[in-house]
Length: 223
Image (cartoon, rainbow, N blue to C red; front, side):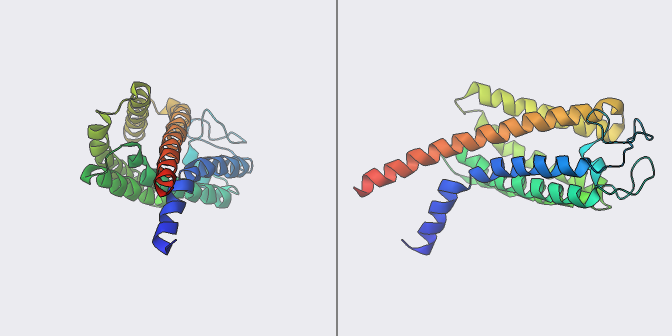
């Protein structure tokens, strides 16, 4: 088997597992990180620990907490965030593979989706707010060809989940930019993350099943 065929075989067989593994690793590392968080949020600056309901995911990456304390959780939180960024970059690479036909639109989905997730990685820097905006713009561009292709997709439940994910991302972005309802933003952000994770896992399972069928078909042809 040539090197290119080996690479294609690896991508086909194993790459869809990466986002699932990455999400699991992210949750583990992030949970460990926030266990060291000194506390403090926009809602409750004097809190003494990380709060699921009142701290944003990115709060754990701040050098100084909202309560004015040195953030001992930052290093591990940044590590977890980089893991998440790489995970989602891989996800957008395989996302178009749920469609039976690969074309210019599917290439645009991957390109802009992976670009958005690459920018997302740099949210741990002092340019966090700018990275949020750029990620939102690139991500929205990726969703334009994705929604066009999704319109013809056969699984209505999957489509409903995607629409819900995108609607929640708009809500989160709107609150972040306007501060309208900001008190509830940390909780809404966590719910959005859970539903996004559901979408990622479901997508990976679809691609894995399609790849298994493809590999079996190729084996049968060889015989």
